[in-house]
Length: 246
Image (cartoon, rainbow, N blue to C red; front, side, top):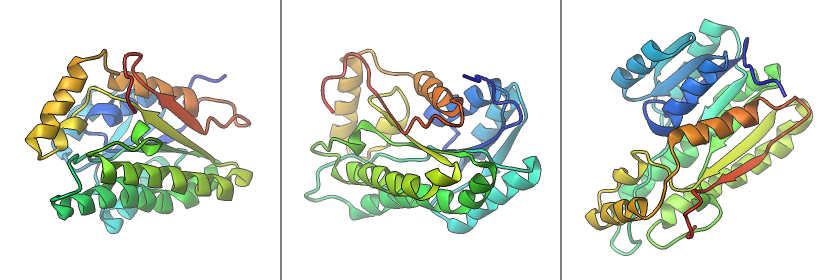
């Protein structure tokens, strides 16, 4: 297995913290030139400054198709190609279905599901040209739904369905599609909820186990994208050893 990404170009969405940040650094350390996108430009600049390799910071809102197309265009203009897309941008606004603020549902669908679809759509012509890789960061919630996470789970189930359809369409053209499904990871994601009860439950869950770290997921991403061209790691399910639910 070739563990270097020298000469490869990657675009990572949601790169301003957590899994996206760790993945961008791991790809850079492996030799890739990396474009990083998110809405928090100040954090992206700090990340680019500490990266071991060339890194391009992009102001990116995955819910805005024009922003997505511009980010892909800037990546290919700067680096001349695109070999790896890491769709990581996401938000988790947990809470009961009854009495929910449905604007939060819209935000999750637009960010988690449509955002990843928009990014694939914009990047795919370049990935077909390079016989590249689409890597979707999903969740254990993309295979097992739980109470109080119905809409979040629906977006992640959607990513799984979209990714499998995409795989069937592009695998014969050399493009590999990978879905990574992390369990509980110590990131900002659980703190997105506006429901105090849900935030407290997330803290309690985190305290009950040895949670995954963003670097653990970044290592799995690196494993998947450094396989030989004839090997497609289509799905990686990664839970903390201590996690029993979902």
